[in-house]
Every structure is written in structure tokens, then in C-alpha cells.
Image (cartoon, rainbow, N blue to C red):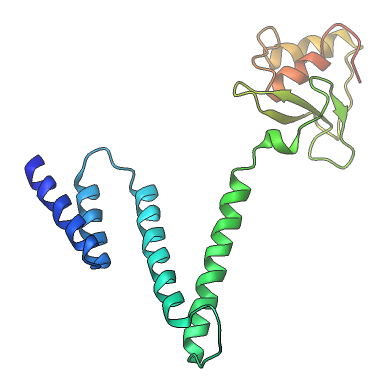
Length: 186
């Protein structure tokens, strides 16, 4: 089976060398798909990008760098649509690679603050296990913390298992901290 793959690779390289790009791409894609440890999405994108680069080169050869000429309207339309699609994908991928840490750089860590009009009563910036700075929201905006009443504090802490509050990246940790015996930080 491995020998068969080598023959197909040689054939794809020869076709590519003889300008039969589409056929070479098809064979290369089939070889990669047949292998066990293959990341289909990334290699498909890389393969399509190579095909797009070749197509752009072919278009540049026809259109040239200078001068004027007549292109059919549908050609211009197809090129415009393709550019808009590629530009949209590029913007999406760039925005996905921005981390929460990029947005939250320079924030005070481990200092809860009130969030009027926010989804919760309080928020706090903390570092997670990966080293990124994240925002943790906690507390019901429609309720008061009545931690000065021992019975309420005891019931809240029992209900939320505050003896084992978990990670600082969880709302339970910060809620339990607000309901501790010490006076609230906020």
C-alpha cells in the first residue's frame, strides 16, 4: 500500500511539473485523504489556496499590469465576489485569533468591581490556567448581600459549598469570597 502511495506522489509531481495543476491537486488530495493521520480542513484550505494562487497568476497573465481592455461584466463580477469572500474569511480568522487576554490587557487582577447595568452585580479580571486574562461575572444584580446576618451567611455558604470554592476563574469562588466572615472588598 505504501508503494502505491509513492507511485501516486510521483505521478502528482510529474503532472504538476507539466502544468497539469488541477489533476495534480486532485491526486494529492486523494493521497492525503487516504492517509490515517490527516487533518482534512487545514490541508483542504492549503490546497485550495494553492489553486487560488495559480488562478490569480493566470488572470494576471491575461489582464497584465498596464493598459486597458475589455473584460466581460461577469468576469469582473466573479472576481469581485471572490475577493469579497476571501476578505471576509480573512477578517473572521483574524478576529478569532484575538484572545481574551489581548482585550483585557492592563486590567487590575483579582479586584472585584461593581458592574452597573451589566449582566451580573460584580465582575473581576483573573488569569486562567493558560495565562490569559479573563473576566468573571458573578452576583445577582437584584439582590443584596446580607452577610452581616450570620444565619443567611451560613446558609449561603453551605448551599454553594464555600468550604471548597474551586478555581478563581469561576463565579462561585468570588461569590463565596463576598459571603465570607470578613467584610466585603467592595
